[in-house]
Image (cartoon, rainbow, N blue to C red; front, side, top):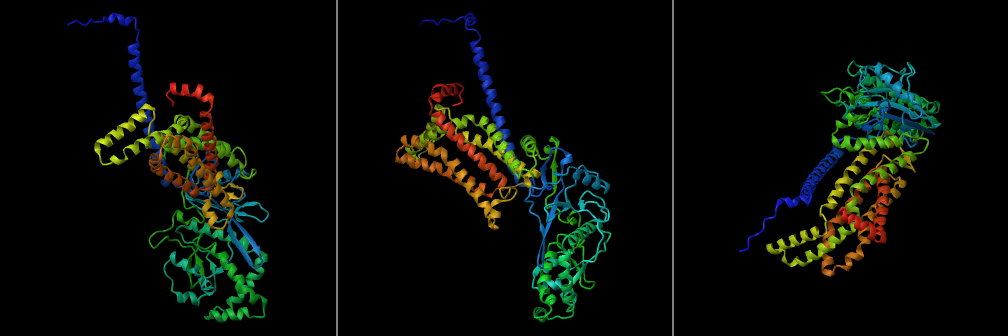
Length: 612
């Protein structure tokens, strides 16, 4: 037997450190792989957190409520309600303004917020904001101007928040008579039944024996006095701005007197017949005038909590109790938002909501704030918001492109792998119950992926990148005050489009159609572009197997289109612009891959770097 020669280790000197370098490369690759797994695990955790918080962290379409983002603490705004009135013949209407003029507090007068802070500090607010709940009353005049309601006693803003320890009366109160529950029963309006939900039961007999009109009480009890005073000030302000107008009073007062002359009459039909058939024009119009007045009163009574009726004193009083056992706390603030305010100004504020908000949402909010607040929303009719959304699309899609580079350029390869896998699946279709053949099936699929350097989890990693970005954009758009009040092209960007469409606002139909079309094209375009390649390598049986595999993708596509319809208008604009970007990107990559430049220069380089 020939003895094997032993190679001297001294010869390794001439080999350099090749073996050592190879070993270091292997170690580096393993570390890189571990770091990559950790990175994707963290992204998955953050994405999952973001998805959960999307349903937990409260937002609101009203400025000054919900989770909101600000550049500086001086920019924090309270929740505000804008009223407007219209007088037409006998009817005076008061309603909440739609803010269709892109109005935002302090945009045209930066001193307003400073004055509000000074007022609330004087009333005992020691916090850096307006508390969880606040209410500022404004009025949209017929000449288009906006009026901050100020009292005629002390010229202070009609404003209250949950952090204030006291509230001083702002207006001189006058005797105000509003239609009583008896009158609502007289015109067969069930609105009076709502009062029974806010107080202890009252004997209906006492109501029917009472007057057609009740006075608004001016008497406050010590418990929750500030809430009563604030609500009473609101009623007085709205009365002065609408009901007290001469063009309304000239018919209202005589109509009230005409009906009050029948207060001892219990036959409502008799009263109506006598008034309607009267030769006196005042009496003839009385029921219509007072019915319009009742419509106006309905706008005021329940929101201000003046629902405690006293059929003996004929008064509407403030309902101090939320129920039999609990007194009002912040719930007593009239016209407050239902969602508590949570302003986020600095990075540490965002950490209170976890890493998703601090690492993804907060930086994105600063970028959008920098763009959206660089120009006046009011002067540019909402175009500032659209420009901000375009900037966000460019930024997020660029970041997404960097992380999805391999997936994007390998999209045609992914579809090709699906076709090849379909061939393998079709081959083993008759052997579903044979464990040995199924093992060979799985091994053959694994060999296919390994040979082509393809990961079946590539689409999943793509979702891990795009999902947190999308959720972050969603939360930021919902949380920037200037975006909440933006109207653009007749669309209220904070509203849900399909809900507005059901309300009869047809201007929301085009955006819904565009969302569906863009999302549908974005989902099916890659399959259309690669249809020839897949058909060329498959027979009919394999094609049927391929269709079964794509069934899940079709369901996902339909779900995406469905969600696009459910979102608010501003997010739908983001989806449309982002969808157009994705369509252009898909077409660009497709035709680039067919060019000689890609085949001769880019593909070899990408293959060498293992990016394809």
